[in-house]
Image (cartoon, one colour):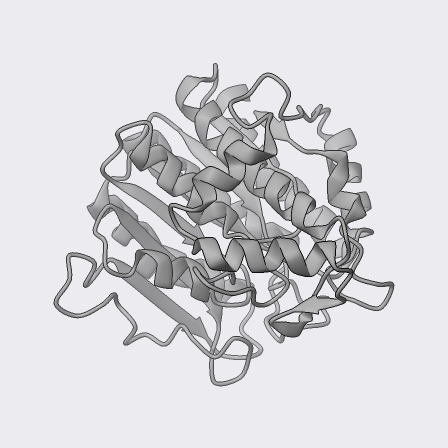
Length: 321
C-alpha cells in the first residue's frame, strides 16, 4: 500500500477545543508505525506544485469559492462560511495539499505496483460543496480523486463508499447528476445528526443520468456492530456488485465508533475490519483490487487509531496474504 502524507497537515490550526485538530495525526502515526507503513510526500508526483492541485480542484469547486477561501486564510480570519470551519493562515495550503494527497493516491492505484493507496491527511473533505466549506471540510478530497480517475485515467465507473458517521453531502451533490460515480453512504440518520442530508429517498437528481446512482442508508442512533454488518451484506455489497466499479474509493471516517463524542452509533474496531474485508472482496472481483481510501472523520483518538488499523490491515491483506 502506498500512503501519502505531508507535514503541513499539522499546521492547519483549528484550536485546542476543536474536534478536528492536529492531534488526530498522532493517532494516524501510531497506526502507521504498527503497520510498518512509511508515508510518501507529493515530491515526484503530478501534485508537487500546489498550483496544479488548485487548477484541478476547479473541475469541481467554483473558482470564486477557492479564491474566497485563499483570501480568508491570508487575511487571518478565524473561520470561513460557518464557525465550525475554523482556519488559520496555513489552512488554505494544508487543504490544498490534503486534496493533492488524495489525487496522488488515485494516480497510484492506476500506476502503482499493488493497486492500493491511502491518503492520511487532514482536513477531511466529504462535506465540502462546490461553492462553500462545511463540516470541517474545504476541498472535497475523495470527489477530486474520483474526478481524476475519470478525467485523466479514462475510467467510466468509479464507486465511492462512505462509512463516516456523517453523511457526505458534498460528495453526493457533486456527482448526483452523473452515472460515472456511484455514491453509497451509510451514516447516522439525518434527522438526528449533522448535516441533515442523506435520506433514503435521495437517490440522485431526477431526470439526469445520475438518478439511481446515489444510495443512502441511514442508521438509527444506537445501531451497533450487527446492524452495520447486516446493512453492508444486504444493501452495500449487492449495489457494488451490480455496478462493477473499475476502482473503489472509500471515505474512511471512524466516528461511527461507540467512543466518538460527536455521534451515537455503536460500531467497534472489528466492524471496520469486517466491512473492509467485504469491500476488498468486491474490489478483487471487479477492479483487480484497486482501492483508494481517504481519511475523513474520527474524533476519539483511540477509536481512530484502532479502527484505522483494522481498516488498513484488511486492505493490505489483499496483497500480503
